[in-house]
Length: 244
Image (cartoon, rainbow, N blue to C red; front, side, top):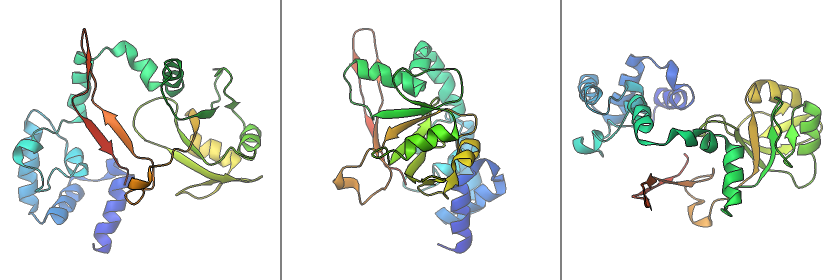
């Protein structure tokens, strides 16, 4: 891989929305060995089809790759199409219960289902979280993280879906929080620049099974497609998600 391609891969993975159409097309051309014109025509057919793929989605998901047949390419669905389909086919009254991770955790535990242990919530609103510690200030955060046995921890946004903004706290001392894959930061800067206005749940780190240790360092998951019908629940297939 050339240095230019490597730099673009890094940018694509960290700041996709700032890529120009020309940059995306050139990247797909280099990765696939196809001309920009052929890439453009291939994407445009999918853009006009049922899936309505944006150029960013086409490149991010590597739909240009020859490992996908034309029939398989046409199965990709744009986020712009996905959410209207979700609204039409799903009971949206469950959204709050599934997208608020503390509430979802409470419901799952009540049904004796295994979930990662939530040990604290970083939150600066008036909300309370029962017996779970609420951390709102640098001093509260310091006292909690420097207590023996509390690290390492995995943090993710309290609301929403996906893995956007996840953090791994590997260590802490009196002045700094040590983050995996990020620079160490002071407690004040952590709350200001890493957490911001978002609330976060802090959980025990879940370790992968040894059989997949060689494939990823972050936690792998299995995503189930769940179809709830009047008299039964079906799982037509599952996706094994291995973080890169």
